[in-house]
Amino acid sequence: MSRVIIIGAGGVGNVVAKKCAQNDEVFTEVLLASRTVAKCDKIVAEIREHFPQSKTVFTTASVDADNVPELMQLIRGFGPALVINVALPYQDLTIMDACLETGVHYLDTANYEPRDVAKFEYSWQWAYRERFESAGLMALLGCGFDPGATNVFTAYHAKHHFQEIHYLDIVDCNNGNHGKAFATNFNPEINIREITANGRYWENGQWVETAPLEISQDIYYPKVQTRKSYVLYHEELESLVQNFPAIRRARFWMTFGEAYIKHLSVLEAIGMTSIKPVNFQGQQIIPLEFLKAVLPAPESLAENYTGQTCIGVQAKGIGKNGEEKVHFVYNVCDHAETYKEVQAQAVSYTTGVPAMIGAMLMLRGDWMKAGVYNVEEFDPDPFVEAMNRWGLPVDELSGIELVRD
Ligand code: NDP
Image (cartoon, rainbow, N blue to C red; front, side, top):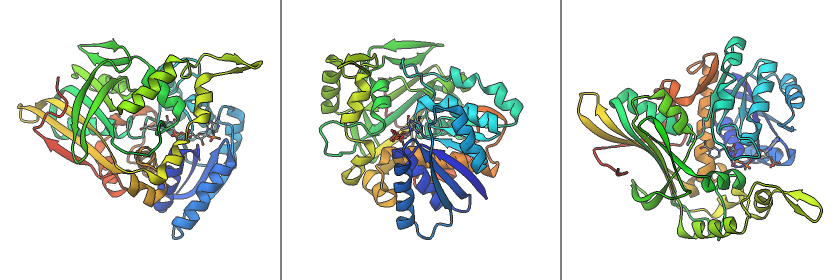
């Protein structure tokens, strides 16, 4: 039915490509392009080995996604309906520009970030609204798990369970073990920038800032474990509090083990997580980029990873019958299972599957309108249905307050 370009062949790109291969009725032709074409070729070779029955036709290409003319040439040469951007957040705007120039729809999983300052906000991408609208094109922002499925879960709460959501807590637990002393589960540079930044949550109409990892509590993750979890700023909070204005407080929580925090504190204390360039033997280098080069690649963690992730959204407020209500919508995903299926750990899997689903809904016309949108602005039901079908079963738990005030 459709041709798409996937840009980025890292942990997430691998999963998106393989899920497209599984869903070959929708994704008939896929061009997988990235900076290093060898990574694309490796993924396509694995697809031929593990999914020999797939009818999707794959080709690969090398592209520098920081370069708009190069991107336009790639897009014009292939003629896709949609570009799925799973490169890095730094490339969001150049890929959006190229999509506008060539008349192609756009989807990504993380908001744009400038390289020189860790600043998570949608303003740069929301500024493209009018241009996409007048071109008759759609851009879907943040369609991974968090952001992505967590926005869908919030919309699902609002559609099926609540008249008004007053308190929203998004919780993200990785209870897996990869056996390495210190490693990050997705791009280390992006991950460390997110964790070492100040925390922030929404309360009574304004943002409350915290020191990094200042607020914590033990949270029970159904089917997984009780884990200490920390308040972080996460980008979906920004669009959710705008799209659900009755929300009085919105927080995002993530688990970190003690060893992880200890390593990170040392690296931070000695300047290794800095994004300010330093002079090293006559060359300017960014310590965090150097650190990335010496840490294990996220995709290399997959093979021996055990345990599960549990990511969900707790909502509290006024239920459909006017009662006080607390409800939790979530998914549990197993690292070893996802490795068996697509040779990836669960963090890449839980991001890549929603990206494929969002693309499918756009291509089928279920989620299609001109402009720039966040995921919660669409009907959550076809997305939840597709999560159940494509490997991320959705569960619900009512009446138990997992996250306390
Ligand atoms: P990786 O670092 O594993 O992969 C990134 C890929 O993008 C690599 O193949 C890299 O190529 C390629 N790339 C980087 N720069 C360029 C460029 N200028 N031109 C072309 N290709 C480029 O990251 P992940 O797969 O872990 O993450 C991908 C995206 O998913 C990120 O934006 C991340 O923030 C997002 N994410 C979203 C989540 C969510 O739930 N919403 C969760 C996890 C991740 P090369 O290998 O040659 O450097």
